[in-house]
Image (cartoon, rainbow over all chains, first blue to last red; front, side, top):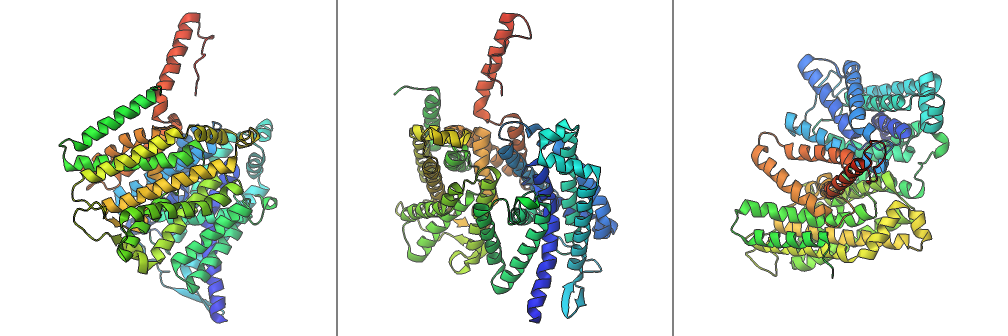
Length: 291
Length: 339
């Protein structure tokens, strides 16, 4: 029973981290309706930034979020202007943005390979290897912090989307671009802002997971698939869905990892992903839960 | 048979390749030629489903891996001739494709959802191959036991036989796509408007599955060739995103949904990346792939129909200019098809 609770607790923590990684992807899909295949590679960029801030300037990964988030926000703005915007409103936008972002991901991966070689890099903070005992369950400090930050980010984002004027504009654009334009909303501005925030958030996730995972040029590929599984499971474009999806996959992977091997755990969640795609592509929460 | 322009290009290209392959050129150049033909061949197969039918797969390396692993495992375990292994690999790729394509088309998966499903299939195959350590050697991969030159065992010491085999495969693939004229039109109609195509009496699912099956079979055979030629495979190289994206790259940069587009893309891209790898690969690993990525992004933004569309664009521009000159004003004219 105790191990069971332990697995559940670890699963929930992992799920929170996964949700944080996916939330930017989901935001971008929900509002701009494009699939960003380079999502995981921006996570990789965030992780490397955190790594170097820590090793070169002794900046704590959690403090580094204050730098990495704005940096990737700007990167997101530039990428949107250069690559995404020229493709919007043309024929086959959906497919073309997938391909362009896949190309972008390839560029980022190989840039990282050129600059920093394929070595695995990790950082050792004062939290490394520490765990906290809560009611008999041992929880890794790094993961617990990551989970808490994920909850905070989710609450802030939810507040911004639901209770501010800008959030209302974002929701309006997400629902109906034409109507939003007619209401005087600058759709282009909302798009670039959303894209930038989505990229910024995944950079922030990079900071948070740096104390837990190694970074290497293709680390994004692993998390990319995971992020897509999570957002499709929860419903592409559904904000609460990303959280639910993250928790489900966190639990499934932790359980399957204990029962079988890590590879089979991934196969299991991918099969789940395919089944959801086939029978309920709008996600388990359905359209009702959108944003 | 009437000699259309692409047919002339095809014949010239084939002859040029035959001559190049058997002329006394350095071994390394021959290697690049083989690689180019392999990607031209697999790109052509990719193009049938993903270019003509517009079902973009970024997970086709799953079928490369299935073809490759089937061939090498059958050879290592029961010394089955790689020629038969190749066939088995192709058939197994078809089996897996049917398993996935049927529900995909049945449930009407399109656009980004289809692409995501294809990536998931690739990851599943890759993970399964890694986890079946006894049979596949896990992530360490498998190498082909060396045998002296033997046609029956599909192993040769020189490069020429490999060149000839891949040339024939490529020729068959291009000719096959060429002969499937009616299917090509059906697939294009389905890509442009599935409901309208169905209303015109085109059997949507049948044609989509046909294209998927042929595509998987050819790519599976390509995987078998890959393992016989490179003699070593592991799940990440043969079944990873890199090969999957490369297939899409050669087809899209050349011109997806055209018969010779993938070949033209491969002829331009593969030598370029090999030269980059040879010259600066040791100092700057990944530069050749970086260039791929940049080229893909630029092509998608500025030339979404690929290199084969350049003559058409130039012609359209000329016509527009001529019209402008005729009417003498900048307002009228412009009958040229603009992108």
